[in-house]
Length: 56
Image 1: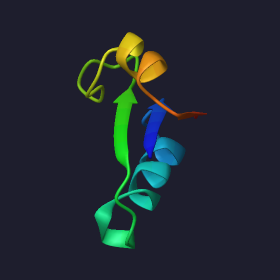
Image 2 (image 1 turned 45 degrees about the horizontal axis):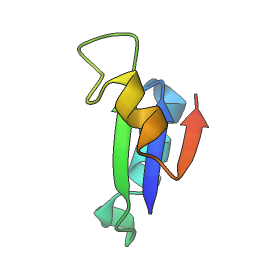
Image 3 (image 1 turned 135 degrees about the vertical axis):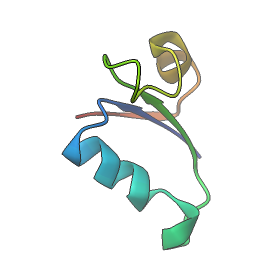
């Protein structure tokens, strides 16, 4: 499963953890944030390469 997260604040970080291997989920997670220090992918990657997108 490919998950996209737009916004990596409190909620976005919790969603990321929920889909992490630490919880038994093996999703491919892409994250964009307007703060370049928090963004791990571009907005285009998140939108075009995700099956589901969370806006937080």
